[in-house]
Image 1: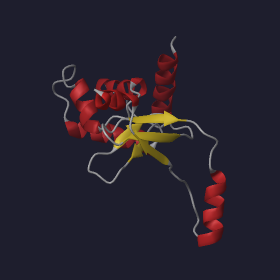
Image 2: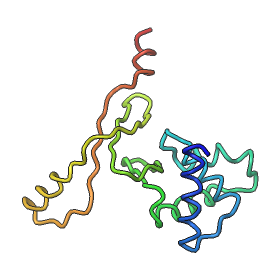
Image 3: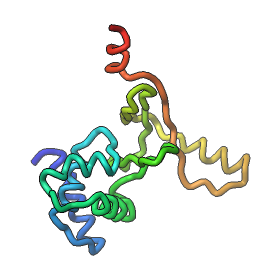
Length: 147
């Protein structure tokens, strides 16, 4: 069993434990997310699966993503534009984002919990999470620009 198969089985158990029915569309959306390293949008997921599920709507994808988010299987990444991206990696990690093509890549770094603690002390807020993003130009775009 591959790592992605194992993660899919664990996610299905989580869904079942939460009382969520496993429809073929829900299974396909979950499998696509788990195998995607690109942090896809709902539209990208829909376009990737519409050939396999011609009757599936974009709303179905959004509804499934909401269910996955509510039970903690995915994170929604918003960047101020209309299209959220979805990340199946719910461990603590950060993102590097290409300013040219928009590609998002995970990178792991020791958690910045002390930033949350300091923010609470300085502001009096009850901080519950943080997000760090690093911006630059990916190697693919650097290569394109070099030509």
